[in-house]
Image 1 (tube, helix red, strand yellow):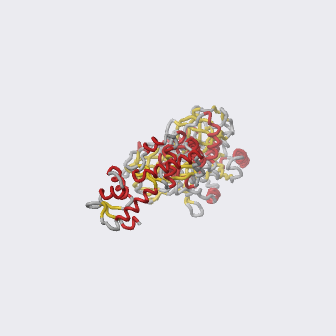
Image 2: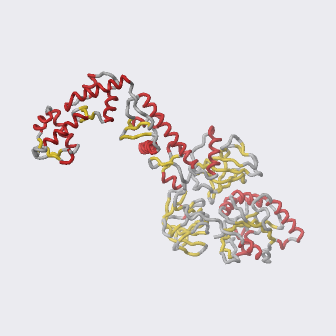
Image 3: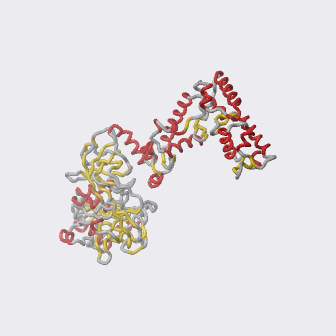
Length: 610
């Protein structure tokens, strides 16, 4: 739906123009009729010559009602800037034009009203005055149409120009958001809220959040432009009947949301300080107007300066006294706390930010500008070693990144963590050159100790996938690492192999081995023999040579060629072992599935012994 708004100074004929175009008088409140000014936002359907129906928003022009004006002007597809031919351009004309520029409105026309009250010369002067004022703005070069509401002058031309505007592209995939500009109770229905939907779609019967509070409500009726419907589309005038809530629960500034909408106390933004505004100190108190919300806060520069200069545009951080429902790209206006005047405005860049430290503000500002330009990986960079939850990253519509343990990290962060792991591994290899590899949990310390177990394990796997490390159960070693014993160590290793072989099936315990060979590298050299298959550790027995183990297997196979079962006593004689050593061997045979436990002894598993 095309949404068109009015803007301009008080008493310049905005509401009369709306009545001329639609036939409706939007000054319906008693106070409005008594004072002859628009106080609340007014809305009316507008039938265009091409058959489309637009939504017309009439905003107040009084300087004290700028918040209401901002609420109505946010999200407009086009605007009619109204200037009286009698008064010409006035202060609120300029302020409204500046606000429209800050809110991102990019199309419109200028309507010079009350043309019947001046002669042609004054009318031409008024039109020339307007042309000068809009120079350099989005309205530069736009049509300027003289009108007279009582005479109907200019009606067809205005309608024809509005028909030339197209609807802005909506975001049906985003969360549904409806900033509430009005809430009332209707007999027989309960609480009704109205507003212009910004994004997403909403189905009748859905449960919605009333932000920034934690309240929820159920939708039990939807109207779009006064017509009942089952679904509320984006960028339309919508009324919602809410069950389970009172009018007091949805004050002005509430956002009805369905889907993920953050409510931060702090946001990063790109801010433009108006050329007409005086300098402003860094950290100054301000009013922030976004949609129908108005919150107090302070504005901090993310550049190496301490003063906002007129006409400058800089990255900033807004620290707010109250939570503000918003998303990246939302437009806002900044006003002075006192006296009330518009200072500037901009767009939200990061509603998920953390507190900016003053010493980091230049780098922070550079990141903010990159994020504003579409580099969403800045969110991952700011998350650092903590990363972002994968679901959170999806809610932000992020793409790319590296997933470790269900969290998403910036590639440069992962590269740094991988480097730290490889450095730790290299230190281990340097300190223990004969070790086959480091225990995985031994590496999960120091610079990597803060990582969750799942994240660390996936970090190790990522290095394995890229062939930078090798894995063997809990052991990790660098892909380029090889154990290179010295000549003396090779000789010692040969002695160890011989000693283990001499022990036969009786085995050699680690304690016995260290007693016979007190050298510190004995354990590492035996592990190398184990990796080569020369020896094996048998639980309850100790180190045994591969030759002895193969000989035992051969003896057992021969035994079962003439016997059905093998009792412990038979096995003791067969292997020439004591009972203390025989039992662990029998258990080992079972575990290797060479034998199976029977009623009176072991039975062969047949082919397993072949």
